[in-house]
Length: 283
Image (tube, rainbow, N blue to C red; front, side, top):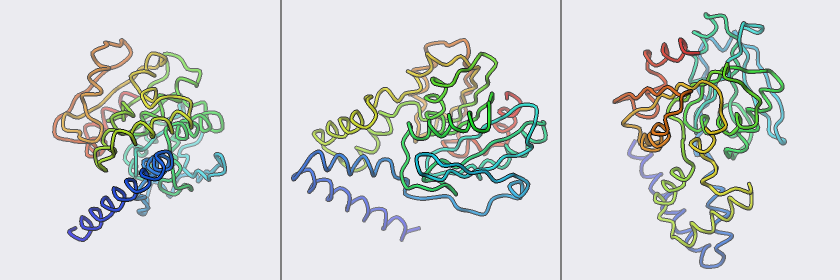
């Protein structure tokens, strides 16, 4: 553990120095490199999948030249559920959900996002993850039930703005990444990125997607989502802070039910047996 922390400190120091030197030469170049780092997972979950995955049908498709891989369980089930994982995670972490959904008679779709798990690629953005969800909905759907953790929740909200859906659709968001600006601020502070470079990174985001970072927001997207939503968040989440979720909660959407937990943080929350039962029963 001490070795791992030392390596992390060295990496942080390296990137701080790199961006400072690059910015002295070209703020634009430094911003492009910094944004690329922001979009690059630093670890990939490749653990051996639980036994339930042996019974799944392996699926794959190309998304802008990147191979996306996943599984389908209980094909032709009574309703389709799509599971979406978070940053530096994999759908193999959601085996308990798959088992419960199959027992309920549902068809389950579960794919690793680009740059995650068994899928190809080295980088991922919210718009790219969104496109993956839309393609799954078209190719293997229609999907009427979704559950998403963390970064997957942001991508799902963006996708639902573009997927024709009704109030019969059901969604579970577990500790979703509510605001991209919050993730960026954490990244900036972590690497001590100066204000001029922050402004340049915002310009890179606009150049690539045509939108400001603040546009990539569940709070903004929710105005266009008709589905019934179960939103589960923990008070002690330091990755996707509850404070962002509470701003949306205060808007009192009639189609959103909030469940606020204590002591589960960002990752334990989706592994908790009570949460699993709550999610399965809701969907």
